[in-house]
Image 1 (cartoon, helix red, strand yellow):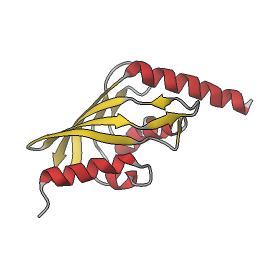
Image 2 (cartoon, one colour):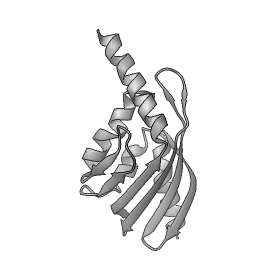
Image 3 (tube, helix red, strand yellow):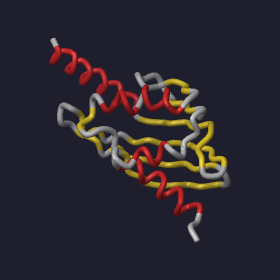
Image 4 (cartoon, one colour):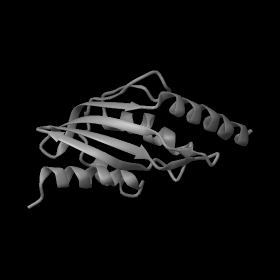
Length: 142
């Protein structure tokens, strides 16, 4: 019998590889309420899974070699809430490590992440990486 801890550990481990991430997103509600805290270019409140993916993961895919890769460092579970501490193992298009740390607070209904997702991260690292690499991408096109 699989425990909730084992299930959640398996779920969040899907973020380690872009090829496995669709299995993670399949367990996020289409109408999820997802908040990325702070004032960097990815910050905001997203009311659908697709809006969140487009504004964050898809945007980062353009500035990270091989896309977003997040490794689980710690999981904390209390009832319907799971807190995941994640470490980015991605590399920027410039070849620099994108070793950002994330803390996601997720509320589940059954097996599905449904609301009150708050993501905390290193704002300066995100802003710097996006702005430098998106600018470099634009320059390469001209």
